Length: 71
Image 1 (tube, rainbow, N blue to C red):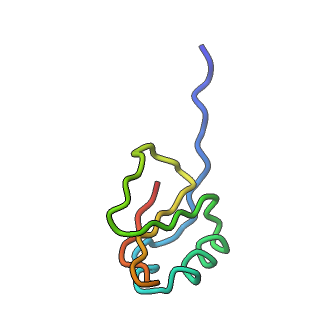
Image 2 (image 1 turned 90 degrees about the horizontal axis):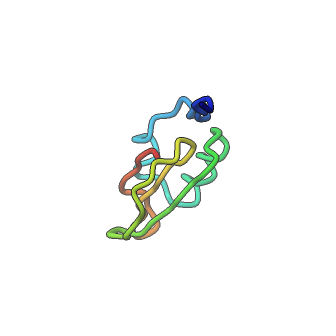
């Protein structure tokens, strides 16, 4: 049987710290902190539900992050 792969470690980061930032600043900061995948979405977007360990998601409305979650 093949070994179970070890997912990459997530950066030590607090998603709530991005709420209120403008979208471009939040994306830049996330990349600087080590996130491999940064996804910005408008409110109500239809997205897939797969979990990606190295991804941080931003919901951006009127240029500001209103919600942030991992995966």
